[in-house]
Image (tube, rainbow, N blue to C red; front, top):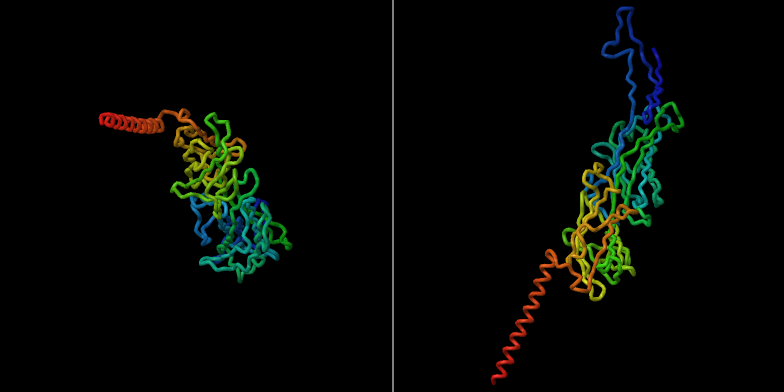
Length: 401
């Protein structure tokens, strides 16, 4: 008989406990590899690398969010994350370490006491066995979960599903790249049963869940594109025509689930930054309406499209340079189609110059806008001719009396 000791050094693999193995039986020429129904002389060392996933789920804690549902989240919304693995094989361990470190970026704030632990299928609530933060976690710091009694076979059955859920709130932060919110998680577990301290561990990472919010900066200007116009106000509607609500103050606003502001004012330089706009799964369209302008100047209406991926982008969660902004021509033809540009220093921000004029001469007489203007002028002119004609006939009639 032999005692086999697992000397595996592969990263992430859990070593087997020492195994007593019988030798084969027989003489030269006749070797028996089994005794009855039992195989002898061989052993299978089972390398164990646990699966570990992280998913954004619905409030029920199990139904995965579609891309559209996840990418429509805005400031003030809750997001529920699910961390899923299985109960490990703890046989032969004196101490077994089981720890999950989840590190969201600063805009995802952990909600204390939102954690739950379900084990098995059908799921059994064992939240009382889960150790989690009992106070607020500093922005960008790890959220640590652990299960001290994971080796207790009366509470946890080897191979059973082990699912942790918890909630974060999507919040605004001051960082220049606050729009991009990534978060990842790692499972750390004991990997050597001969280490009685439990300090020999391996780890496996889950694929990060990514969220992104975008910005649109409007520069309210005269038709020269540079002279600043103050006093402008805009509202923003979604594709269904609902006016969106924001938080903030003149010149700087963010789309917010708890916001109350509908009219967005420019600052002293004629600019307004509108943050926190989701792109949806593939693209989103927002309708901008200028509801006030500097005295005597036109007020523009136009659409802005935000697409999180350029055509051909293979990473469905890419939120960096692949962001694409588009816009329609405004109601007066002063804003060129797709004249919005991507901020070179902040790939999540689209910049659009909104041109205004206080002169009919400044409105282009081409396309639909030009036709409409000509028709309007013709109607006005026709009205003047009709009135003048009537007045002339009336005067002649009076003269004949």
